Figure (spheres, rainbow, N blue to C red):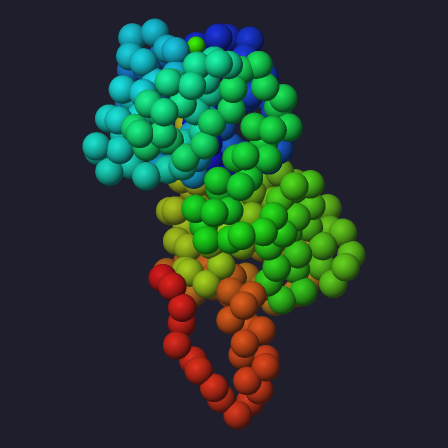
Length: 240
Ligand code: CA
């Protein structure tokens, strides 16, 4: 998952960056409204943390510009405490959630997890596919109940595929969502990461769809299939 942090307060920007990177996200940063608007319009972020009081262009105007340009990434706004009118303007401009300053970093992390899973169509913090459980709260992965130690890149890759289970994800999409702006991107490294991840998981979770990308099966669908048994049953895929 790749995030954008927009905050002109350098200390706060760094604190957010450190916490989010530590939680396993790829993170880009902007310090004013114009830079933020440009990045938000050109890069495919999975979620954005947006301060409202910014130099050059205020946060609400930036958000309005993103929405007008059809950019739909979930946005968590940072507002000053007691400025209820800021929250109203923010929501009206297309914000999905807010945190009032000063905030606890844990709350920002929890709200982002909720935004990310909801935008991918999941209601719970734990994603399950077959024998693999991914706990987004602890950035932890269990295979058949046993913890598996992954590097942050491997976790990011698995988390992205499991958030988008049931859909084929191309290598180009993975490159865009797993690395920050400054990373030396090379789609061949994705294959290497997938290989390592498969080895560590030791189960048949990630399917290669030749020429298209990778697929992790949707847990609900595989459960339904198991219940239906070999005799068949509905085969229609839900969602897209
Ligand atoms: Ca500010």
